[in-house]
Length: 216
Image (cartoon, rainbow, N blue to C red; front, side, top):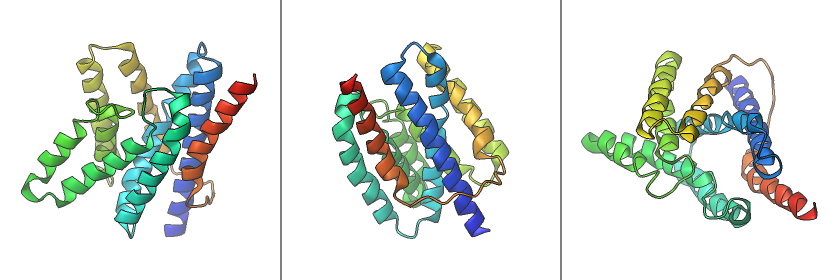
């Protein structure tokens, strides 16, 4: 069962990378094709799920977060040219893990401390902002209950859309809820990825897109 779960998670990770690649290709080369950006909305929720699962399964949280920190810095170098003035996705995942850690280790104030940290996502201009941090936290809280996880995810999406004044960007981001069908599907596909696959794919595909853009 553990092997099957690992293979299922690796397949989900692969799917998320494909969705992200489609999104980023659309962002740079085909900005008018909104369906490519819509497909991209499915990527981050899967990475957020993987982060929550990673927190639960890792045998060394410090090393896990250390890898994210190192590759967040590495990835930011090409990201400066890919999306000027913005942070790449890894800092969001890293802070999301801190939110979970505070919840679990903050004692009687753990929930409050986690909520405060999650609320800072927009202030420090993290990619996906507080929405992304709360998403990772919700997955952790409701990891064992698909129904409650889905309801909490939907409620969070409606709240953030409302809080933004029903802005197009936030309503569009709510398309990410369809990722739940992929996350909770009982996949029969077996796939094994190197544990560093995502860490290298993320900056690698950004560099490749930038090189292609410079050539054409």
